[in-house]
Length: 283
Image 1 (cartoon, rainbow, N blue to C red):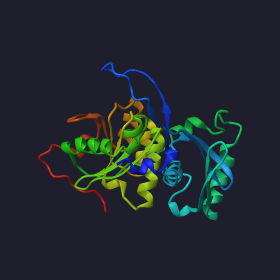
Image 2 (tube, rainbow, N blue to C red; image 1 turned 90 degrees about the horizontal axis):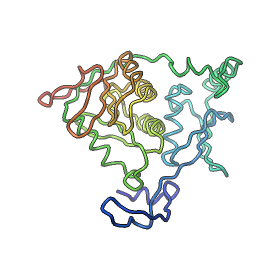
Image 3 (tube, rainbow, N blue to C red; image 1 turned 120 degrees about the vertical axis):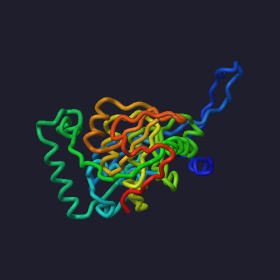
């Protein structure tokens, strides 16, 4: 399972350490740590954002971030993508197709006005609570599949197995299991990477459920809504705002999913007991 990580030394690094384990024995003298790198997302020569991220699956990150932030509508809107290491980090340089470039630059001009908060140069309150489309997919999953999705995600966290320090996001489809998993030191980044992977491989998120290792903040619900995922499952609890946004966007929100236990916070109609067969969503 560690082949991919060990073949990519830029993702991890080993450090000497000392200490004591819970059983009283000394810990191993070498510890494997996840890399943390500044990653800039650059569109037509303009830097949109700089994120601290794991330098893995960066093409997925570029597309997923762009889609979730509504900077593009499809992967075809990006005419060219170059992953460029620099002295201080990595630049994901994207060149947009002419029609998308025009709307991007118009958006930049609008957001650079004097009403910005100063932190990011945008009208941050309205951007933070941007309107979202309601999710129309109507799959049904069994209780047992919630537990299987969480267990499947844990089993495929290759980077976390090596470092015990990264988040993961996965897409699980009833009847087919876990379709894709992406990891990152940042929970938002992991879900962006998953979005990019699903989109590039033409996997319809409306037919499955998203599973994440972190708490459910409102941004995670927003990202699920952007790709039309009808169910979002997490090992931790949601925030109150996340529940309200999931309710308004018709997303089934499942938190504190550990082993056979879980809690559904809204739209529980998609969760059937284990005796019922799951029903597929749209093709």
